[in-house]
Image (cartoon, rainbow, N blue to C red; front, side):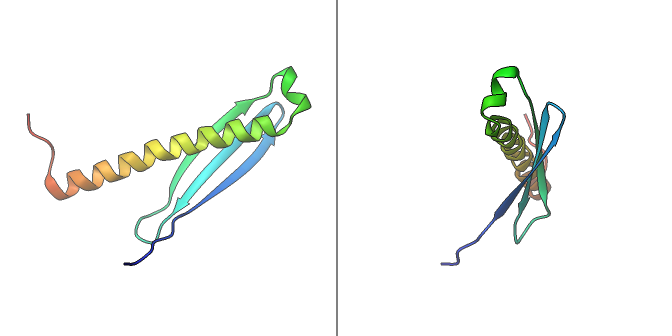
Length: 85
């Protein structure tokens, strides 16, 4: 059995009170899929700066999951044709 490895890289940037995250999935068989997320800092977050990173990253991963779902759905339609009622 062949093991496959997929890699997700998360890039974080800060702009004022916003943290932006980009989650990039690279597989051996498909093109790159990217998800994005944003977190906005509230006053209480200043004591724990990682909160913005964690929230933005989680939102980017959630967006990535939705986009990956769309990729596989498109692949199935391409192979089988659109669903009929």
